[in-house]
Image 1: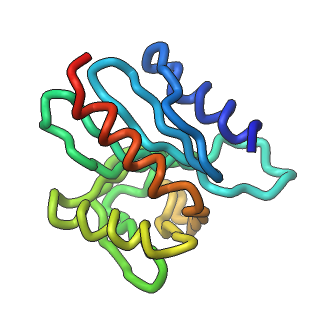
Image 2 (image 1 turned 135 degrees about the vertical axis):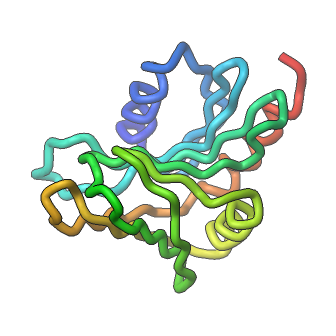
Length: 158
């Protein structure tokens, strides 16, 4: 678990020095000043040395982002490719561009977060630029605690 948390810290550090709020399971929550995130990375086989797809749920102190779900893929997506997040048995169609995908708005974000709280796993399906299918799997243990911690941290003034 420590290796996962350190890897997440390194990824988030690129955007500024974060303060770790809490780490549980495969998830960690970070406070980066103006925004707070609950973050995890996709599971990869031990022999894969590529960066993993990152899932982040972001809150900011201004209130503009209150549980915004986003993904940063390990490879650029095929233009026009659909991205489907399945949490438990619930599929969600996401908006995608370049190497990123997002939830379609606050109603979908709330539904995804509710599903994450009730499920043990999720997978993300898409196609890369060459048309190869990409499937990323995420463990959701620790997600509720880190999501709540990120939301609470950004509900307070800095």
